[in-house]
Figure 1 (cartoon, rainbow, N blue to C red):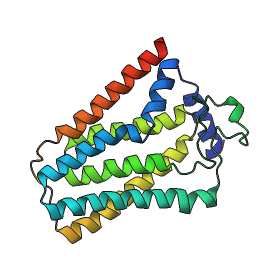
Figure 2: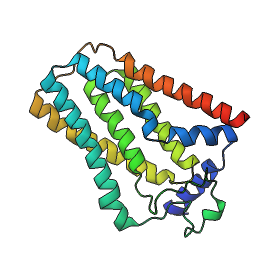
Figure 3: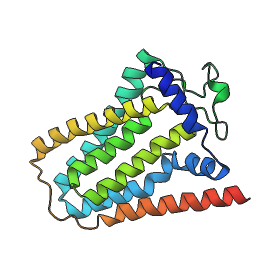
Length: 217
């Protein structure tokens, strides 16, 4: 059995594990705009802990990481690989795929920009703060975001693994440049780091409540 077949089989197995609650939950969790409160809270924590020059350099580093992950995945790799998303009608397995709310995503899936962006952010913040509990939360957040893409039927596991690797590579490269330019050294104490974590946690709770209500009614 080759890798593509194994990837396809694993996808169908994981995609087949669903329920009305998980469908509603994963559909919302996979959204981009719903995480804006957590992003704003992260910016607040950065602003509170760093002087303006350092704050702007960090924000620039995060923005550059996102730009790299998006360009590498969507503009560079995808057109060459041209791997159809599982849920796309032209895919031989599309009739076996469980989709949610008619969502099929774009045409191509490899690698996942979603995985690259979320793991890019998680990796950059990890390198910046070096706090294990913050890292654990963000890595868990990014991992669940990846799983949501399988659950919705728009990405194979291999797409997500490749995307995560792109995210790690881009974040590490940008952070090394940022550290050289800014002379940054990790601070022993980061104040109000709980703010973005609480914002993320409350968002997950809100999604869960919404999914429960959607399931019941």
